[in-house]
Image (cartoon, rainbow, N blue to C red; front, side, top):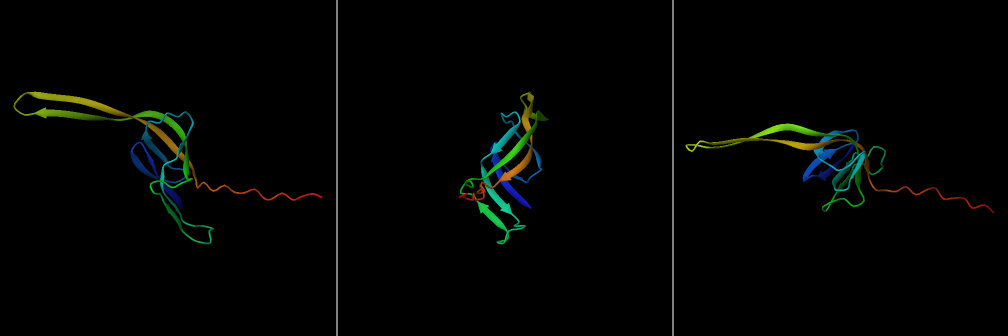
Length: 122
């Protein structure tokens, strides 16, 4: 299993391919690329070296996470109440965060595969 820790909206999320999560509102129509990858872990299936871990300082260079935007919506309402005793002061207000629901499609390690060398024809 491979996963990454990304940073967006001042928060950090542990994601893997196929995850669906709500993040703070992003200005994107169909696809978004998260470039702030703080950690990358691969279990090493099929790799001779085994488990691979990359820790960023502060981010891992060349790494990105691609996600598909599913919808823009509002979160649940949060009620905020202010109260002061003995002075008849009471205020209640509400807040609904604007969120974007995204589905993680691919964790791109930044490795570009070199095409096979072309054979020279004589």
